[in-house]
Image 1 (cartoon, rainbow, N blue to C red):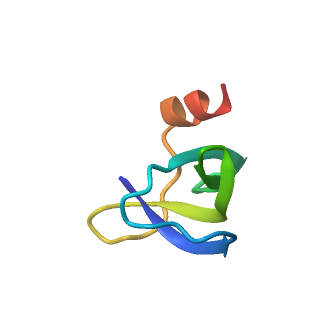
Image 2 (tube, rainbow, N blue to C red; image 1 turned 45 degrees about the horizontal axis):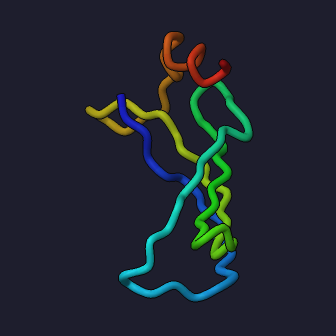
Length: 79
């Protein structure tokens, strides 16, 4: 199994440069049987530079068909 990005919405709020040190956060906003909705933020010195909502789908490697998120991983994400 692997996760692939199915959809991404990104709001770029401030410009960053190549050498800027950014802190990127991620939290699970929603968990369904075969995908996750993730909230992400990129910050520079505590200032919000960008925010995103990403849908990551769980798929089988051999054919990229949707697959349920394995129970052990789903339990860890719920914690």
